[in-house]
Length: 159
Image (cartoon, rainbow, N blue to C red; front, side):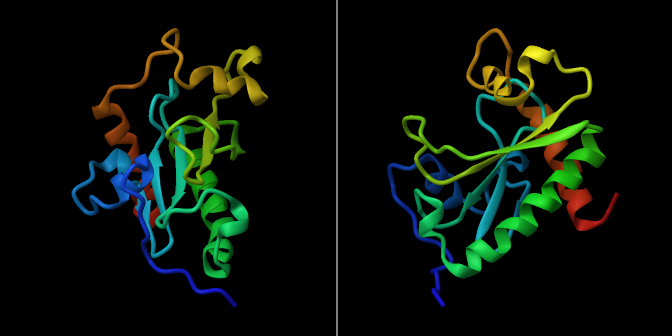
């Protein structure tokens, strides 16, 4: 059985830099947290509620996860999907993992609330047209903080 340190960071990594700032992060960067994972609103996403699930230590592939991190992963994915459904009313949640964008090689999982009325061209893999695309503006920080607070409350069972 492998044992991972609670936090290992790399200075040039966006995810590690944010994790190192705990607990000063705004709600959008700290939707939820445990000893292995941090949940944040995605950066540059043109859809309110688009989350990323990020290991608290620096890893770049799923194969690098310690057994304890891997064991917690599925539970987080289901809990976050349920919370997104309850809070946003989405028809589905999409789950994806690539970690290939420049500056974002830190392993992370996208959990995307797919609205029922989403343009069919943006469904499935097309959803990534909403990420980093000026034609789909990013929600304001206050909006992301608001949904982060709602999702946090839902995950705690307060809703």
